[in-house]
Length: 152
Length: 262
Image (cartoon, rainbow over all chains, first blue to last red; front, side, top):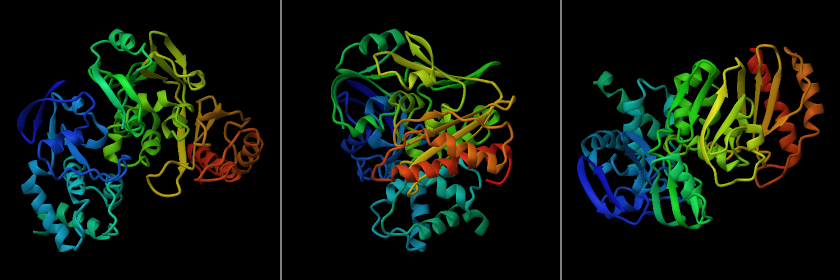
């Protein structure tokens, strides 16, 4: 089937198998940041934004993205770099494998929640698993990132 | 992951229903559970172009379209105004925001999943399932019907002024529930109690409970009622533990509605 997706601001028209997952489509389009970590919809590593909302690209058909805007880490590099510096400050990036999904979820949360509490941050990020950091460094980095203008 | 030769983005309920008559076809909700299987399908039917992703309030009922996501249930001001935090409490422990932005209420209800928090809550309310072409069926009857080839269009919740609360317990955050339990009370004081993740599908509990029970009255009535409820064992918990947990969670839900200490 033919789909037309706005991928990171660029219109892409492609002929794809009907049952192709959005995850596989994005990898084929060169978005190497999008990784599949679990195959069970649990880890959050494959998170991308579909019309601005975080979704699991492993659990969405590419056909469903037709006519919609998809954003991956490659499309938000400047914002990601700013947040990444806060992660590095806390030593919270560790092996980095889960970072693309974490970054996409944090950027979505920044758009969706106004001045989230620590509890709200924890709830929002419950779907992003990290096996290195123990989460505390990530939480400090997120809070510092969200409060960066106050601190400056 | 399933295989499908064709993805049909249905333009009408008639088209979706016609395509769903073949055994090699299946309707796709949020796809989160379906992708865990390995079915080989001819046609996967997508309802996302039918405008079934809205939550709408009328004078006598609230309509939840089949393609409404669990995240919409969680954040809906309509549902929050009518039922307080119950819908948010029901779905917030389900994995993460990303999954809840994908998973649909239609998929959750159609699947009649034994682990469903959503079904546990909905059964405590006055809900009808709108099917195409069969029309409306009470949810309590629907959960006992074998899956057929109809299309789940929406859920209709009658606005009867019920107060409702849901409790669940998980061995670890974001896991399937060990048990889910919900309670609701009409303005006249009639209670409806449900248990889900028994680990079988959710069911109502027949119970004689005063309109405003004390903790002791609730415990006594629950002990008698839960003795008749079938519970099962699996890797998450044993049947006896689930029965005990059901008493605790239902009492908490009842007292949460009463506004007392749980």
